[in-house]
Image (cartoon, rainbow, N blue to C red; front, top):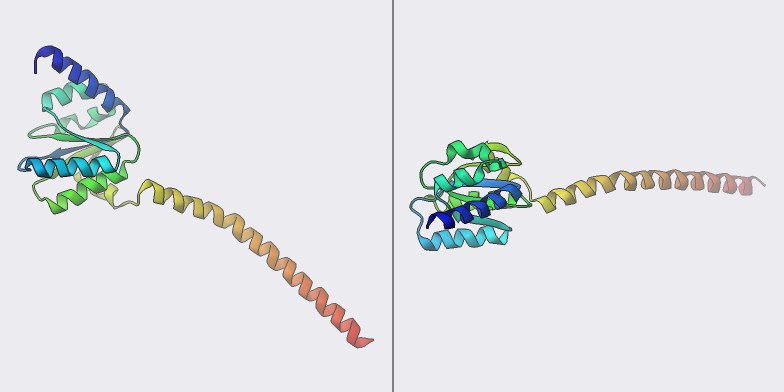
Length: 174
């Protein structure tokens, strides 16, 4: 890569790092091309990007972005996974892949500028996906009005039973 190509590459990567909600740094040493392509495919399915980048270029591109918070971990063979929306799904994909292919090592990650270590990435992967969390929140929010309606209908049913009993009592006493 000549100097102009490096400048363009750094600018492009800087723009993508600036838009990313989260990024995960991994050590890919020992992975073969097939494994790397399979990992890229799994990350692509969850709307994440995966790129092997020289540390020097990654450090330059991350300056002024939230990924700068993990710059100290950019040593040795490094690749970066970027996500622009859901941060849980790419973390799950990386952790699952690392369990299957022991040569992949998760170094660290960042979410909205907050650095998380390897254990933080694993904890993040243990969370339900964004869609599941939204569905759970919606069901909790819907449960309150539904319970209120059931309580009101129970009061009305009890009132109707009392009125019916009074009516029957008056009919039998006459």
